[in-house]
Image 1 (tube, helix red, strand yellow):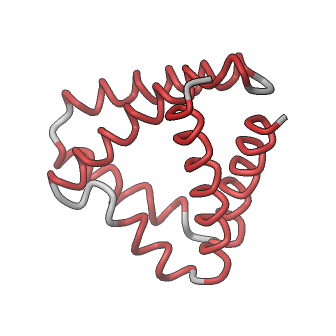
Image 2: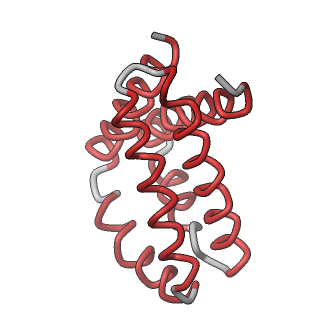
Length: 128
């Protein structure tokens, strides 16, 4: 497996676990962090670049991972949705984030379940 792809997937798994933990320990700070996505054109394009790189990392790493088909599909989902976001004005992305993040983070304890489970599955699949 390409070590850069492996490192990208590892970083994603750790990020998700930290996001889930922070959602429980520091819910207000986590809400602000998530609300900062697409808050500026610069943040928008940094997010898109990260999504492309990580989507490619999942596709490259997937054959060596448990549940490889799921991670190939996830990588392509990231890349496809990023391509859509590339043609959408960042202000629309900002409006969507301003609408969706408060709904998704209404209950931070419930929200935390998603990234904690996803991070654990990513790391399990990577090291299995």
